[in-house]
Structures are given as C-alpha cells and as structure tokens.
Length: 301
Image (cartoon, rainbow, N blue to C red; front, side, top):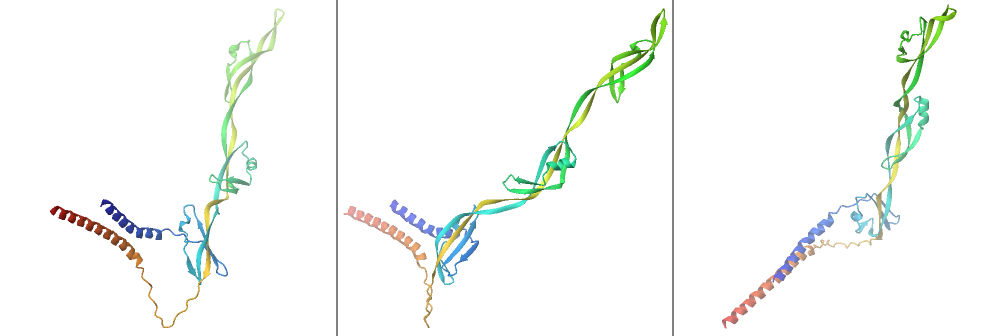
C-alpha cells in the first residue's frame, strides 16, 4: 500500500514539473545576430553572432523559420576566434641620469620617438613632449684638499718665534703655522765678527679646504601617443540555414475558414495522469475494503 502511494506522489510531482521546465526553456537568454546574409536565390541564410567570453552559444536560435516564401532549417553552426582591436591614448614618463644640465646634452639623451609597451600589453610609438623636459640635481658630493699660505715678518730684533702668529685667517679658513724661514736683514761687526741684528721671518701656514660639487643630474620627460593591441576575446558563430521553397496554398472559394484546432493534449495529459493515479488509488482502496469484508464474513460463519 505504501508503495502505491509513493508511485502516485511521484506521478503528481512529474506532472507539476512539466510546465515549469517548459517555461524555463522559453525564458533562456537569446542571442541576436550582428549581421545576416542571404544568398541571391534564397536557398541559404547565414546569421553571424559575435559573442563575448561571458556569453555562450546556447542562446543562438536553432528552430526552423519561414521567410520570403522559404522555410529554413539549421544545417551547421560554425565557430571561430574573432580578434578585437583595442587602442587608447597613453603618456609614459621616463627618467634618466645626465652629467650635464645644458639642454643640448639633455636632448641628446632623449630621442624624438620611442616605442613603449604598457603594463597591460598595449604597444605604440610615442612622441617626446618638449615642454615636459625637466632637469634636477641628482645629488652633491664633497672633496677636501690641502692649502698653504706664507707670511713675512721683517725687521725683527731676533729669531724668536714669539713674534710670529701661530694661526692666520686666509679666505675664511684658519691656517696653522707649519714652518719658519729666517732671513738676515742687517749685519753688524763685533770683535771682528759679522753678526745679524735685524731679521725677517718667512712663515708658512697650512690647512685644509672642503668644497662641494654636483654629482649629476636627473632628467625626466613625458612621451605621449596612441598604443594598441589585438585581443582574441571574441568568439564568432555562424549559423547556416538551408531554405526550401514553400508550395503555394490554393484557396477554395466559399469555404469557411476552419478554426485552429485547440491543443487539448496540453490540458488533458496532466489531468489524465492525475486521473490514472486516482483510479489506481481507488482500486487499491476497493480491493482492501473487499478483502476486509470477506474476512469478516468468514469469521461470522
């Protein structure tokens, strides 16, 4: 008995699912052709569909149709990859090093045109924009060198270093006494000996000088132009339909137009299935009731 109920329930679920499935098929997203070509004799029609990667060929109509006295039937569906051209305006900034900052030296490093490839794969020949050329100091360095200076101190009474300054200022730098060269300016005779009584001190001072210099220059400039590429991200489908001429229909005079037959199958089939299920259920109940009655009569005898 339980098995009978299960079969009836399954039949009912199948009956209810048939209209829903048909409705889902009818509402599938349709594809539309980008172009349609018809042969001169009307024997063939080609419909071209250019689909993106997110679209599929399931939406391409495949059913027969009538047009201009022909009935067309799909005979083939061809597929081919379709390249797509892409281009856009692009600006590329370049940076390079230069030892000099004069414009002649800088422009010698920058060609008028250069080929570039963008990060996403587009290529093109870009042109230098002269108004964007800029030169900046890349950095500074320093150097140290030894310097010296001399000072003369004449008419000194003796060779005594106390008369000689130990440091001097020279060009804003402080120099330190390094050496003294004594020269005799005047001599006097004493006890038959020539003795100097006036002296000149020639003092040498030394020190270091640190200077800075430009290590180099950084040149920046913009190149602008059009970059492009060919993308293989389109798929072309060609639906080929063959046509057959439709025979003309001869009209019968004074004949009443017959009404279009009503499709009773769409209504009767589901109800027929339900009726069969109900009949099976009724027969099962009747059989059970009959058996119980027979058993009751047997017990009464």
